Image (tube, rainbow, N blue to C red; front, side, top):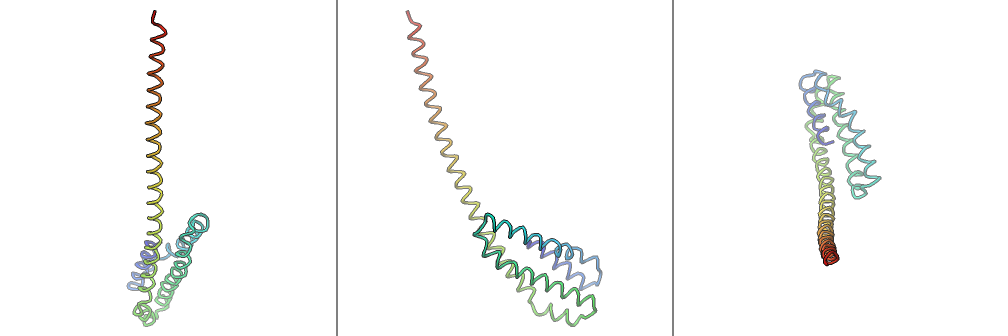
Length: 158
């Protein structure tokens, strides 16, 4: 999502500088993709990642505010209202929104890393138990085969 927002920001900036609609392609893509990304994240959070709920609740309105800020600048630029566009850009609101979005993304990433580390630790523990059980079973099988071999050789002896 962060990458998509950065692309939207770049497309918006290039459009404002050139007035060429072709530069809005990343912006248009983001406007279509971000609501879907937010919905996917919300679905994941509501079904299995409750520890991310607070991050989702905080992230969504900031992302939507960033999209609105980008949209406002694009629409004002299309209407040749460059002074108003300049005010939006000079307000640094877009930078503040992106910094807040980055902060939420870092928090989301940290929780995901903790979850991954926990899964890796659990997998390593399971692997250790499996190795121990496998070695124990191999030793038990060796003992059983040894006893069987001794019994067979003693039974065959005259």
